[in-house]
Image (cartoon, rainbow, N blue to C red; front, side):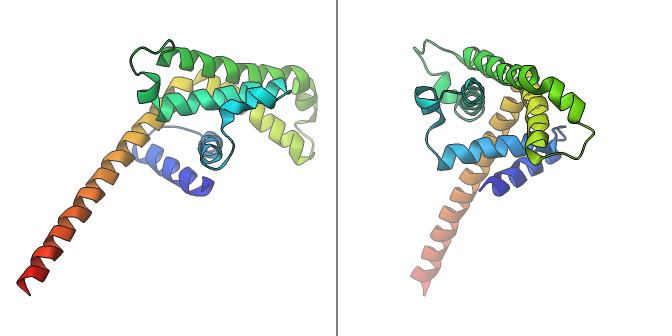
Length: 176
């Protein structure tokens, strides 16, 4: 599922001529696919003891809510608005970045040039990624909103097209 989402997001940003790194697209695709196949991320706070994972989960949830479910976020009589989720997403991704950077930044800097373990490479990847998502949170959620709207319109078009095709077949079979 992640690969399908990744391909669709990559195709979307290329068609819209939006500059987004493949690492970011891949991460966002992973967040979306985790949402569809796993325990709801909002439950992470209940059982999680790692601050890093709490920050990451809160950032991911905010990204999904603002990007895909902003209709739910912006419904009437809600104490929190979209801006609150944007702030929370930016802040929690930034906290995840600082968490990694403060604990592993010096080590990562010293070891960057060496052929080291994949875990270290993952830390470098995530450190830079979380900073980027925090700084560009609104851009990425806007991409998700536009992607959602475009796929919804396309889905409606295909649904209408299928309905019209069924009507034509019914007319054809009535004439036979």
